[in-house]
Every structure is written in structure tokens, then in C-alpha cells.
Image (tube, rainbow, N blue to C red; front, side, top):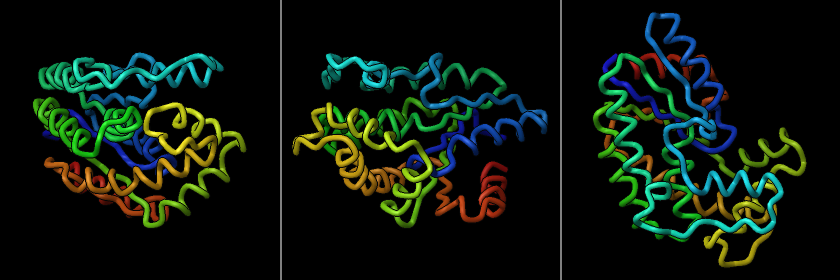
Length: 229
């Protein structure tokens, strides 16, 4: 396989984590060294200040404040981290499977911190350039009905889950309307979903877009196998 970096992106509950774990197992079974990186892995080579803030919020710290949108802070604008990671991958023989870090954290978080869509586009371009030495491939999980998908995910998770996540979103500058709890959760993703779709469409590298992959997992795996060669 010619790439050293496989990116898995898409909405929460779309199948990224399950696919990442199984893909690492399948590549290893074929003799390819592979490592799967969960988005919030504590030892992840790409970290953001918003992740640290999230851990404080979910740990019950009511006084924690989100970081500033500082263009000089590489833990908010993460292209330098991606560059170091890609350079390391380029000289090795292992494939890194990275779930939820590119769009869900490195692009979504600056937007939560108040970055404009144009600024997010610029951040994406910088990250794409930084990734280039690892010849990345993007697998994007998409859903035909985002609102219905979110409702299904919420029904499968503990009752407090959307309100807790929404509480985290609500504490960011994005929340100019003063929303709280689950209202903030749904409002943010109503706003972010079309932006993410546009960003996926503008990603310049090899991209596989899987629509409603969980409805037919066998077909999704056939598409992934063909995409990765």
C-alpha cells in the first residue's frame, strides 16, 4: 500500500472507531504493520488545547475556560504537529489509522473557538500540506439524514450524553445564542454538518465517501478494500 496515513472522519456514531480497529487487525493479518489511533488517545501525536479543556469539563471542573483562538498556538492550529507526525510516518514502514482527529477535532475545534468558515478552510489547507509526506487517504463516513442519525445515536447512549457534550459546546465562543445542554449539541451539529460536508468535498487527496455505511457493512468493506488496494 502506497500510503502511510489513513484518516477516518465523519459524525459521531457513524462507525469510525469500529472500522479503525478492524482495519488495523486486517492490515496486520496481511503482514502490514498498522497502528490505530483513537481520537482522544492520551498519547496521541496530535493534541489540542480543546481536548484538555474537554477533559476538565467532563471531569467536573466548573471553572475551566476554553483556550483563546491564538494563530501562534500550534495546539489550536495543529499543522506543525501533523507535519512532524507525517515526516515520522514517511520514513517508517507502518500505517497509521487516525480516527476523528482531522475534521472532528483539528477543524471543528477552531470553529468552536470562534474561527470563521474561511479561517477553517485555511487551517484545512495548512494541515493537508503538512500531511503530504505520509501520502494520506481519507475515508469519510457520511449520513443521508444527520438529524435522524443523531437521534438514533442519542437513543443508544446514556440519557445524559447529549446534554453533557452539549454543555461542553455551550462553553465555547461559538455559542453566541446562549444555548445550553442538548440544545447546544443539536444546534452545533446542525450548523457544522454542511460545513464538514463542504470540507470533505474540497479535500484534495484520495477520498472515499461512504454514505450510510452501517446499513451495509459488507459493501462498505468492499469499497474500503478497493480504495486502499
